[in-house]
Image (cartoon, rainbow, N blue to C red; front, side, top):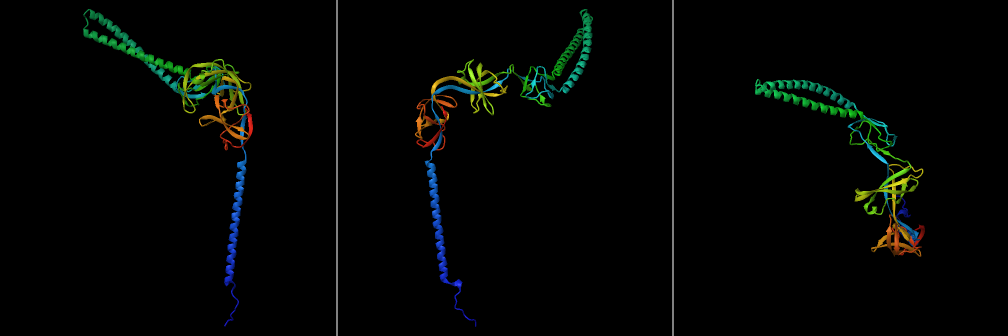
Length: 412
């Protein structure tokens, strides 16, 4: 029999189990404590950050007001137009055999612009000549027959008057004479029609080569070689500028504004370039005596009047027909007034208002407005020189009483 050992097995000691279970519970409690501590620390940090930013000033851009002269004006788009413009057409329907110019090219008066295909016209011309020769021969024969019928009628008339010919014979002679005359008249009409067609075809053949009616620049090229062209569709447009140092500009002014414009008044013109905007002056030389309907970019129907402006070309400015410029009409000038940008204004309880900065806090100020342009507005009451007007009321955090820091953009 095997000897029994009194040494207990290690893995089956009940006291050991309870000891380990107690240690595990303690570890879990310590972890929970650290999680709570960490959460409290994070909340404290977040509260501190929030408090820091909440206490920080909002930075705003302001205008420091000063009185200055103010021009009441409005602007419209204008386009440089040529002194002379003409669409060049073909005089008949044909295919384009050859184009001699390109869009943007310069031509002199009488230069060849295009050649039209005349192959079909040549066939028509030959056919008309053949038909005309046939009709002419047939008409000559009909004239011989008419002369014979007239002689026979005269002889029979003499016999009839002497009662040697019957009335029936006389009627037949008259019928034959009338038939001969009708045939000659019909052939003559056909011959005339063929002659007219032949003259038209020959005119087309003479005009299959299209020449420049005057010197200028080729613009709006509509044609391509090989394509059919009709007299109703222009091949191209020619621009002609009399003087290279002068511009003529057209703009369309609303009927509500045209009453403030008169011939001889000066305007400001702006040509927008990539690197800079070029301003120069012009003078109104013509106001159309009538208005035309137009549609605005928003789809609204408007009545506008064409206003023509003359200007000298600024030195080294590459601008010519078709270029767009901005036209500024100054209709009145107000001396020494308070002016603010329109981005500052908003409506508060039905009144015009804006924000000003006083003691580094925002104050809402109700104001009374006067004349305005697209970018600025005159303030007639509610502001004084030196006031700091907030440039953009839509900025985040802008509200009455808010603490702000500010920087001056420019004097207004």
